[in-house]
Image 1 (cartoon, rainbow over the protein chains, first blue to last red):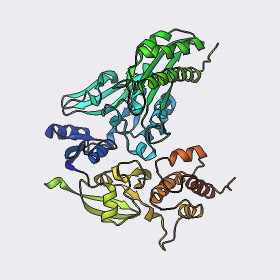
Image 2 (image 1 turned 120 degrees about the vertical axis):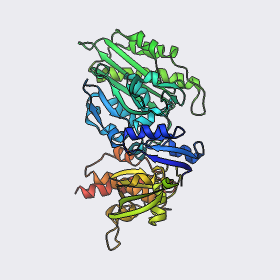
Image 3 (image 1 turned 90 degrees about the horizontal axis):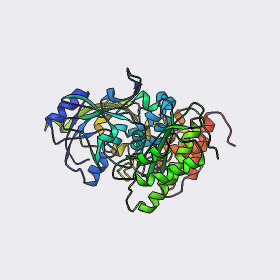
Image 4 (image 1 turned 60 degrees about the vertical axis):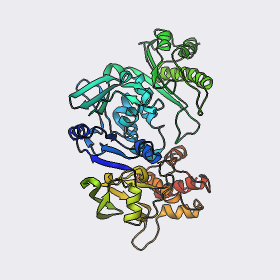
Length: 295
Length: 164
């Protein structure tokens, strides 16, 4: 038995909103792989919950009318990885979410939960930052959308207002078309582990594949919330796809990141792997885009 | 309070069931306490060890971090559901015995249910894929090699291929 004060089940988004308005103290439970564990630990014991897990309308991936990739917030990690749209246009997200926990966790864990708990180490979050994801929230006043960077406020805190729930994550067409990327998770174990550092890079190459027209990079665990390394992006935008560019990119990330010491890894070690992973992920992004790294 | 209990209908190991449950119950609680399906083990109870793993609509879930109310309308399969009507065991269970993949047995039902999810796909997985798909289980006795061997052996046998 869980120490739950009350459980309200929503069958639709409208019902979820009205339950959340009616019970302002209640917390949202999606797949529960964080919420239930925290109840078990005592951190959320005695909570009132609004379960949105039964809202099937929030599952699945499609293109919206503007050809943005629309990911329903309750889509599980394993369904994201197996989805044909993701595999074709955004395979790096499938790869990233395939590194979350283990197989059973990937069947219950949802991308909405992964982003709403505001944790820096969330395997989906750095990739969503790096691909300019837009968060869709539905509340009593209707729907609002905001860039994922504005959604994260501080560690464990996202811009989810009273009565609101996250209903979708969108990747606009201009954010995915022509880009190829790579996510690298650095952790001690290959399964059931939390990232010491996660690095997601993607690039868009010029027609002749010799110049990096655009590049985006985001980290998890390089700060209290996921973050973009804007100095590094500016440093190599328009540069040739050579080793010098790859190295410069890794060096530049240090002006953007601010990791901390924790029992999982020291600040110095995180800075070191941040450099290495940035270079490595950029190199692979270029190769996946059909380019090559010239000397 | 009226919403402390909920009547749910679900299929458990092929049988349709209707049961009144406490909304605070996990699916592990429901399966063990209401249906005496004790192959579903209470291990870590935080979704890390995989001992409580069951199939829900064909996918693996750690039932300890799955609210029982969510089982409404679902099809649930536990290790008990693998036996034939005479109580005979399935090929994957036999393979676990043959390959000495069982020692204390606590992780075994959960591990077998992950193997069932793999085998139901009806395709050949690489060794690496099997490792990934079985990675949600902790075994503290035998180690994992025998478990992986049992899964691979059964997979190849079902596909009509001889083991290399």
